[in-house]
Length: 207
Image (cartoon, rainbow, N blue to C red; front, side, top):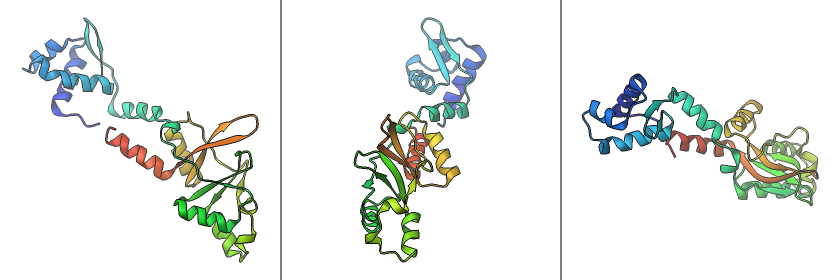
């Protein structure tokens, strides 16, 4: 977040003289306590300052980069995941293409009759099948999909920044969000590069 000049001065005062009361900070800035209250609230909620009753304000020592890093670690998949687009493993490649375009997604998750993850189907997989001059309406997606253990997955409690790192290093567009059970991986959501970009934009805007 970007601090205004008054907030920067407050931090310097607390850093040099803390613990210090709000009244004493206000005196040094020639302001009333009421005028200063919103700035102190912002700095405290943002993590720059800490406050203790009847003692005053302390400087936490956290820089903007440290605060950003802390915030990133609190952003978890379950708060940003979207609805997964799944197809049954017996569906044809032609039907999968139709689903992909109708849903406007780049990746489909292939599940069995019990809704457990069996594979992932990307645009590249479908393009490869089409280039092979196959009859796409006769080819089940189970033949051309990427199978376990070559599928990257994540869980609801995983940090968004860790998933972003996976997408970047493995050069993929999205991953399924799963619940791991004894029977298999239950698909409960999806995280894509677009999802992560929106999350980071929200963070930069302070939402």
